[in-house]
Length: 108
Image 1 (cartoon, one colour):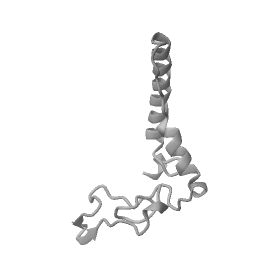
Image 2 (cartoon, rainbow, N blue to C red):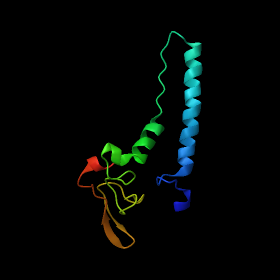
Image 3 (tube, rainbow, N blue to C red):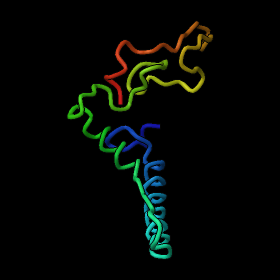
Image 4 (spheres, rainbow, N blue to C red):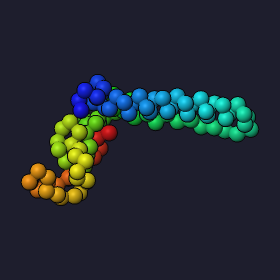
């Protein structure tokens, strides 16, 4: 549903959940570090890293920020949940194959 997407083409609700999760995880990591000062607690925010890759994809040498390299359906996502990568199926009365792209280095 396009109305649920953000400016980058990602699902807004999922991003909000990831941000909240990371906020709480960071607070927990800090609390655990305070309680166990002889331990090392490492917190890594993968959401921000991946979001940055998608938002600034061309800066990092990518051409496709949100499109699947191996899939079916074409732009913008090249994804159809009914068919997985490498599979051939009949979809809507037509044979379809979820194929890999020519150059996976172009895709985030």
